[in-house]
Image 1 (cartoon, rainbow, N blue to C red):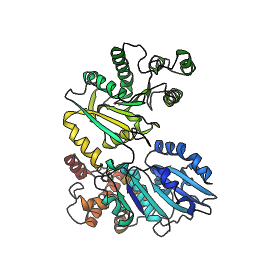
Image 2 (cartoon, helix red, strand yellow):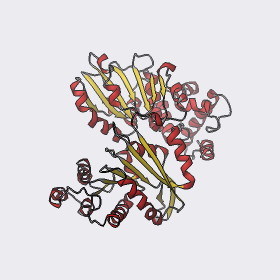
Image 3 (cartoon, one colour):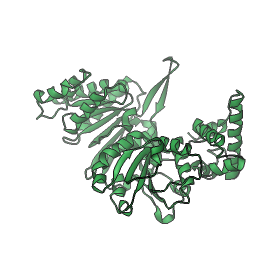
Image 4 (spheres, rainbow, N blue to C red):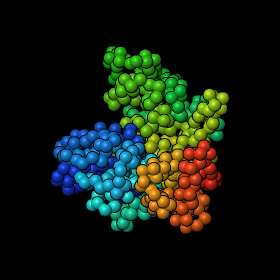
Length: 466
């Protein structure tokens, strides 16, 4: 097992001698927490792998772990892998032909990913399958390495600043509460950041799809006031005639007013698929210089920029049919992913973070020192469902087997290393035994119509940690 705690391109590991070792029908299984990440890889890798004699496919269901008929690269998500493993009749099933497993983005270890990796490691422990794991830089990756049984000689941990590509990080702080006035105040410094790199493309992240147009309009107006020109950010060599074929393809014609100023939107929801494709095409050819992206679309955005601006790190969620609004902070994983859009091979990148003054030190500590990583299993619906599934299928027949199954999880490792967070007042096995008791009680309670109390202690401890 090899673990690299640093953002390293998948192409580097696949372009090395690794694939040359596969000389007969067999497959490499690449796992990621999100399908959008898989789709980006497939676009980047297809030509390389075809030249090396490998086929490449996104796989689901029984196709994830079925025997290989040729040399294959199979890409899937943690949810699909967990589903495939859960359908096996024998928990000790072997998988001939599985030569290499690549675990990408382990820093985004959610409940599905943790259960999928735990289950996979358990079933391939007697096979000669190599496993390579990658993660964003973590502030303490030793427990992740221990969980995955990584030998010290194959464990490599780096700080974010150790990257090959140059990245300049600038923070801008504001004392104005989250409101339209805050984004008005952010407009001028955002525009200055965009034009600080001559002719370089820029990505501006905003909290929601609804704010894309208002922020884009503010940026255009500010640019016009500064330059006295009506062309906004549109390159000087782009004519109205050259824009018309693109405008004709738009489903929402309101976008044309922004495209003509060199600005486009990108949102995963509420935007026609053809419009997204057209905007990305305009961005790739340099007509759209500024791409305003909704926060939730950061995971599906397939392009990078010379300048990335994060305009604010808070957003509202709506509850009770609009009667209640709650202010939430961006997750650290979201910010790291946004920052990654400014990392370009062979070129300097610029990352501008606009945030509240009191949040600056916290964000910079993790952006410079690496992300924290804890298990999210305790008290989760996914753990209950997973445990009940394996109990019903006879894979877990008694308490001892339940504890043994949980011992493969990252939760088991962190419960020993950070006992306060997991309300662990004893040894690791005593903690796992208590979790099994709670899971059994929950399953019986559900079958009898009683409410579940599992995870109350974990929720309380997690709230204190925040």
